Image 1 (cartoon, one colour):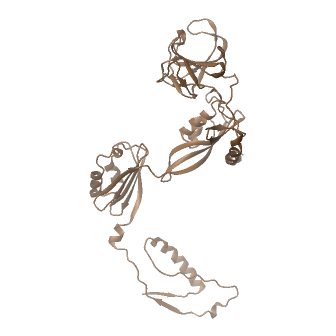
Image 2: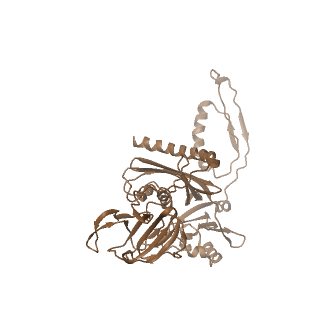
Image 3: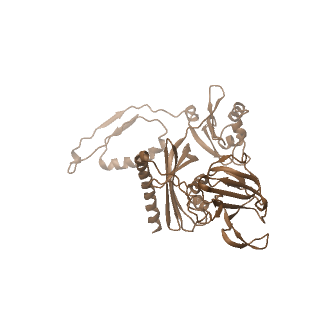
Amino acid sequence: MIEREILTEDRNRAVRRSRRWMAVLSAIPLFGMVAAFGIAPGTQVETVPQRSVVEELDLLLVTEERESMLAFWQEEVIQKGDTVGSLLSRLGVDNADTLAFLQSVRGSAALRRLVPGKTVKAQVSEDGRLLAFRYLDGSNEEFAVERADEGFSVRTAAPPLEQRIVLKAGIIESSLFGATDAAGIPDAIAIQMAEIFASEIDFHRDLRKGDRFIVVYEEELYDGAPIRSGRILAAEFVNDGKTYQAIYFATPEGNGYYTPEGKSLKKAFLRSPLPFSRITSGFTQARFHPILKTWRAHRGVDYGAPIGTPVRATGSGRVAFAGTQGGYGNIVILQHAGGYSTAYAHLSGFARGIRPGVRVEQGQTIGYVGMTGWATGPHLHYEFRVNGVQQDPLRVVMPEAPPIGARHRAAFKAAAADLTAQMDLMRSVMLARAD
């Protein structure tokens, strides 16, 4: 029997304190009623009648059988040398269920390739029974196991993913990757950002300490954890005091990045054939040649990089020459529209399919850094030619791609306004923190 009586205000306070302790019993189903009272100012509480109310309530007891069915999801990070058995042991699965599980998933390719650093999840009852198991393998396929009437059922399928938009910012201290790592931005996003602004900024030569950036990008999550980054939707980079902005926009005719005013960021040529490298020798009228031991003009730019580093075409065009040419060693020469051509020398080899007459696209790999021909160390010699005459690729004004067309301008302005507003907000936060 449970006795409940209407209490005075002083006793109500004591009861409320005691009810806090009942929160720990929230896992046990209880049935009852809670009454709330409000007393108006000036009410004579002494005149309030009191009566005792006695009720008989049935309490559901937690039996041993019900307690064994209480199950919780648990996670374990895969360590180097882990096996499925060792993971299940750490998750608290009993030996009998571990054996049954291993027999059910025998031959599964996903569990033969456990990836250190990834997470497995299991629903395990308090008595060690395995009820469910989840693992997102190295190819981002979900391996799911459910307890069935007899043993376990196994399925592999594309995982249910959640999409979200991420807004982050950072400040350059030493390098782009150092800044993006500090801001928790994936390397894939850092590479995209470098490619977006590649026609404006040389990310090895032009970066300055204190440069800052803002980036808005897509991200996919699995069970609340990021697993894959998508496309950059908008970005801002302040380099040496000059601000560059990019907005992604797609039309039926294509897609690309534009300034908030609709001007295309894509130039006909990239500034550099290597996204991250150092210039070892610039475009000069005269320099002392390390092999010929004479003073000669250097009509190109040399980029130091390890042998085998991919070399990309700075502009779209056709292969005019791919082979060996005197002191250039292995060289690819591309012919572009408008009387422009580019040359890539001292290569260790050519990319698959690179031969005269083949069309290549801007950013496509055409060869690999080497030290063939007259070279004292691994590097790429790059030349930018206008009507056959070498020009300094770091100074020449590059032709631009067409802007947003008139029929898409209204839609673009609406999209750009929303994205620039997000970047404005992040910039305000950064400046406030700096103050």
